[in-house]
Image (tube, rainbow, N blue to C red; front, side):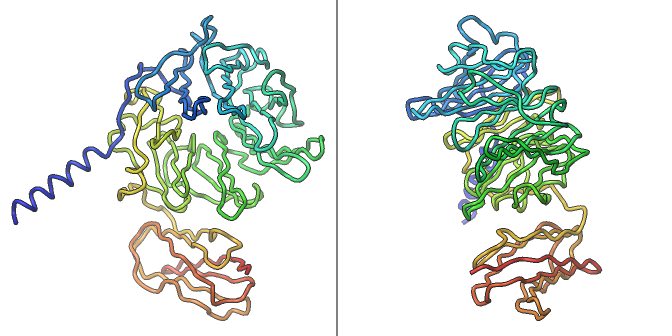
Length: 426
């Protein structure tokens, strides 16, 4: 029996040692961004942008890397701020590189050759493709957004007022009736929405006036819509209504969020404090940094069954790291984030039918109560009425026995009381 327990303990220790990030065999350079593109043969290529040494390419999930700066070496000594990918509809993709202050370069053969694409004498720092059509958008450091309708062969500046002079650090695009919604994150000037209604652009500022919105992305919400995520210098925020309102998702860290990728309900965020993982669509997060000896993570990418992370700075090895997704989604990750305040989150999804998830956080362990009321103030459900430890909590509310309408849920923890509204639609 003692021998059995010794073997069991040895297996557990071995699994914990092996379940960690692995540094890949690649030159020690600051890796600014990662991008994954279809390779034209049913597989995936991984592109890595560097600070001063062009672009590296792996065709075998990070096992080996080659330099792809063009047959004429046009990218050899360039700082590549961003890499854009535009699938070509035949299994391959056009790749775009934002090269220092020299504009955009374009490759149709996986980096073997690069040609000048446009936006000359501008530093291109962000890139996005429309979910419909072939529209491309490039954000610059000092000249707003440029738009291409012909796969990057030519570009036209768009936008008005503030975006004309602001650094556009991030872009994401959604479709709308009659056109496109282009979201642009800037440095300290806010998050802008540019709407193209039948060819005419309008502009709306959506807040974040004192933040650098360095990352924007969209993720399907599971009900046919899209949630927007904004990574700022103060954390990660989510909007379920097209940017009109924002709620915190990952903010109890001393770092901004530079990238966000997902696989189903598993979300992965890069920060200057390492990688954080959520297995419940961003409702709660845990650190996942075992083996990652440089926590200054600039970018993440998913290829095959792996998560890849690039690192920069002088606090550890600058490299690219790899870890199986299964390790990050099937093991218990120990959270080193402790909430600093009480907070009740908006339920998700909302509206819902018939169930929804409610999340909250508490900086102290105490007796906690979470109850649901109808519009007349009558209690219809008690979800929690017991002692809970300090930390992050979630619970699913099944309203299959209730009729459609507006309901309110109330959280009580000591002197803290918070109420939010939700909509059941059957």
